[in-house]
Image (cartoon, rainbow, N blue to C red; front, side, top):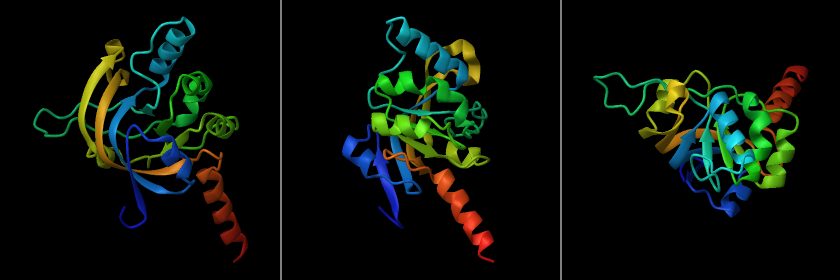
Length: 192
């Protein structure tokens, strides 16, 4: 660790997940899968039909992103890889967490039910900074389509990431960094 940043590697051990607190800064390395709305719907449909999902969900991390292709003259694995709004994936969370998903990456606050689901399943939600797609893409060392190629940029990909800069937005105790940040801001404004 350096400068108060927690270095994490997937799969993230349960005791490590439980030690994280909302607002902690982390750098994530290892395997991360991409999935957005359409892919989530297909994965959940497969699980409900008794079929295997396209990757092992137990201990997995999903990044809500549809990375753009890398430029032909680039050494990057992908082009821009900025997070999408996470709340759109909330209707799928209960099934995915029940199947073993342990962490997600996205931007913005989650539904009212999400903190309770994180507590119940011992999972976390990592926040990524919106508008920083080029910075985040620099952490992606490789990307391979593993399912739903017909979805184009929204296909499920297996990413190898290195020191991806994130923060804990929801921890395993249901503490919400978006709420803390808002409350802190409002109290500072009121105190003037």
